[in-house]
Image 1 (cartoon, rainbow, N blue to C red):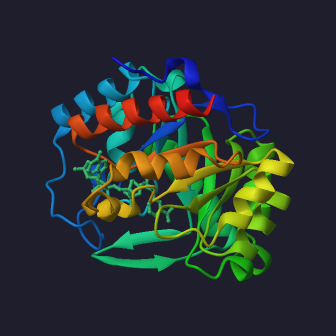
Image 2 (cartoon, rainbow, N blue to C red; image 1 turned 90 degrees about the vertical axis):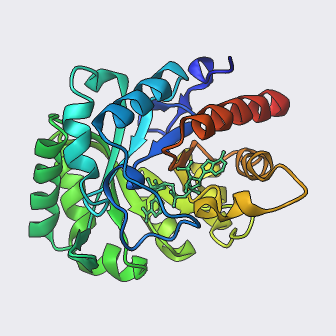
Length: 269
Ligand SMILES: NC(=O)c1ccc[n+]([C@@H]2O[C@H](COP(=O)([O-])OP(=O)(O)OC[C@H]3O[C@@H](n4cnc5c(N)ncnc54)[C@H](OP(=O)(O)O)[C@@H]3O)[C@@H](O)[C@H]2O)c1
């Protein structure tokens, strides 16, 4: 069985070491307002626990959540009880999802409240990486709202160990990396416009997490090639990439993705 235990890599200069594949948890907490090709049922606790255990056994130590992922954070607290030190936990601030609608608040007061709430929900005293969950206006959010200054304060207080942005623009990604630790970037077979952010990270020892590595599952519908392999070949060919966060709730997909990432990294070596 292929695992990722020996393939952990540094997350930029944060001092954190992460598996090259992380587990995205939108589908553990939210089934409204999502853009997956197929409908799905949110896994129950037994299924979620089994998925987390499978991920750990396969060498995954990175998990991505957010207040905007429905009840994802609330569920992960109890589900990860007793294994806090085995995981690098990523959460976010700025987007709230209530009654089927997103709204955004990047103010200093909300940022502090949101992070304190995430600490409680996740039953922990620190969040390894805290990302601004951008609404797309990355530069305005970073420059004019107080969110980044507040995350820097929370880092000094030890409540977050590193911070950055999950953004949508090159300019925002670059500014976020100049002043912070990590960017979460969309980079897949059909969307590579944020590549300059990866280039900057590679030359400045910053962290990069890839979101929508499989284009939210749409890449998997392609015929003729192995789209999962082709996606990971593209992603890991870039030296700036720390890890790809893939949001799966299907155990067979999790195992196949791990095997494919292990094979691709083996070929690159
Ligand atoms: N910060 C942000 O703004 C933001 C935005 C989007 C996503 N994210 C993060 O990034 C994570 C991943 O993004 P995402 O969930 O949108 O997209 P993704 O990881 O590209 O795709 C997930 C979809 O692909 C399917 N899939 C996974 N492996 C597969 C395989 N081997 N074969 C066939 N289908 C497969 C999954 O279905 P199954 O469940 O059936 O495997 C799921 O529907 C999220 O969970 C979240 O943590 C962050």
